[in-house]
Length: 190
Image 1: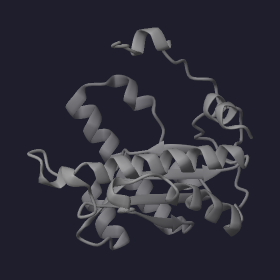
Image 2 (image 1 turned 45 degrees about the horizontal axis):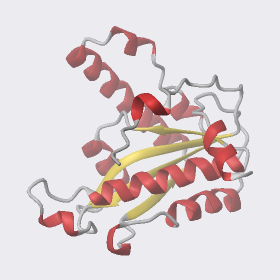
Image 3 (image 1 turned 30 degrees about the vertical axis):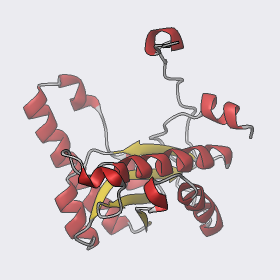
Image 4 (image 1 turned 45 degrees about the vertical axis):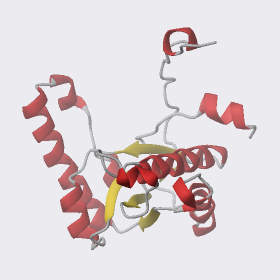
């Protein structure tokens, strides 16, 4: 698939078929993430591949609690309709963690290290595009409690779970999500 076609046609999927995804396909997707840029070539990412229904059930329960908490704090009633059941049905969930000690010069700034998160976001985008090019549906998911996920997956102290990349063969065609035009989102300073 041509790069710009992949960028323009990739969509988030939350409805997956139960078909397994071959290990070689999962590895290609992760390898695409590993090719992302990072500050000082620190490569701060790590990937935990989850297929276990038991672990997925725990992730689902945690997401349900986080969703209830978000509704209570935000008052966003629309969030009540957002289902996280796909965490149980996605054949594969890749938990992307970032090592906060592997950031760039930003670690000396007042706000502390954040570039490791940016690098992991670039890795996630590469993974989403690779999945799409391989005919695999995906969604970038962040509605979880980091402490709970760290404990469940026995993640090292320096590592921060940043996102789940849920993968599966799409059960339905995702609707195209609208984007604002370039003119509304861009300032040229010449």
